[in-house]
Image (cartoon, rainbow, N blue to C red; front, side, top):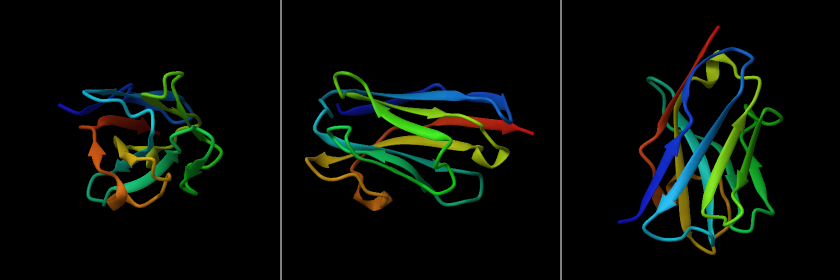
Amino acid sequence: QVQLVESGGGLVQAGSSLRLSCAASGRTFSNNAMGWFRQAPGKEREFVAAISWSGGRTLYADSVKGRFTISRGNAKNAVFLQMNSLKPEDTAVYYCAARTIFTIATMNLGEYSYWGQGTRVTVSS
């Protein structure tokens, strides 16, 4: 069974940092573009960041650019989201997602085929 499992969420104060991790099991995602999305209470799920299968190309939402960094593990079967200078508006459930093999990284939620269950991030002011 293919799974993406997120971890690293929690409750932090504004200005703090968190590092989210996404581990894949059931198959390798080393050749898949992967991304992070988030969904705040009462809002639609939105794009946060994405990375190509090689790790050479990254995309960021304007709201997180300069504060968040997406990266892949050495075996490229894990993806991380380093979140610095967190703000209360970053509060959301964060989801890891993967596209199908050898497709490019995109911001479009509908183009991701595999999804994790999410990890909650709460930033207090």
